[in-house]
Image 1: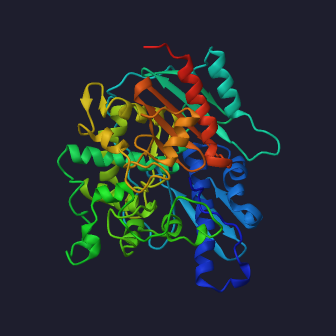
Image 2: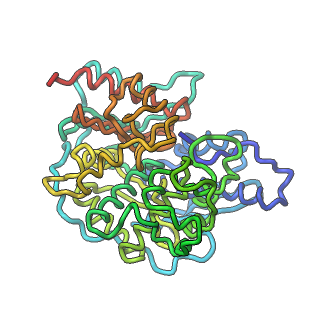
Image 3: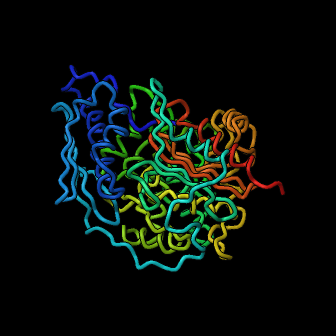
Length: 461
């Protein structure tokens, strides 16, 4: 999995170059946005967050990032060596927004009045301590840092079996109600919002994507469907959001998320690198376009999309600590920027564990979960479905995960730096892990050990 845009090896001697200025804006936009969300949404200590989540990304230039937090105004500003400055503002229910270009046309949206949950609570107010020595040892290992080794940075783990939390643990400063960022696990939430629209008859995943700029049948992009966008095989040539390199700050997909006020508007301008369905390229631009489709189908405003997401999904699952961040046009940053408590993320996993049904009510279309977990052709190195990573089908990624202890029927929402919501239907199990991992494979091996060890303790059916 790709880490957020790296700031390494910025060639400062080329400070007059426009491409360098844009790369520097990625650095300051990333820093200001993430610090803003940590301070005002998660409400964790911003200095600790900077040291654990931003400084490792900045590498040798992190010391050049100067940041200022204005709690009274709800703003964070960051500068980088005089090359760039970014400011992020907290907008309540909309989360944090990097100020880029014209401000939003409307005042911040408000959360709608909460609706009753369809599900019982998965645990009481206190963290659930496990008494099983095998699970306790796996949790101990997941939260242990080893001197000289890359940072594991585990902040929260929640294990749910048969709809109840059987074990959980939190790092100091985090708890059952602390919203944590999902990074690309947010793409799986976008999958759910699309599924609801499909069930309601408001979207066809196999028809040309309803993007006005591509409406001309002569435009090669007219052939792109929402399914192509969700499966990352649209062919859209807008960089990549998967692997790490020193050039990531120059990648258009990173510039889109941390510099552009209209992220989907930026993405829709890019041409195709290959015909839809004939290749595979994981890029946030695909999901940002889907996010705008969700916005447009739910009234075209920030208020409309938040009302829809909470009324039709979050409230019904009992997800109470959720912030789905938006860009300046009211489009969800559905590629990467939803924050929710670890238990809320686990509740989201339960919807997919139960085939899209919550409390007897079908939220997702029949067959949608299997569709989401079905392997996308040409993604075999990684094992990607439709908005989820998957162990189903033959892929190099699935083979590794299965060998590590995650069963063959599992699929997962997964984000950079070790965000996981692993759904294992055969075991009636959801395992959610969040943190700031800078080790190999985003701490996948540690997460797989938790899954493996938990399964070893479950009664045989």
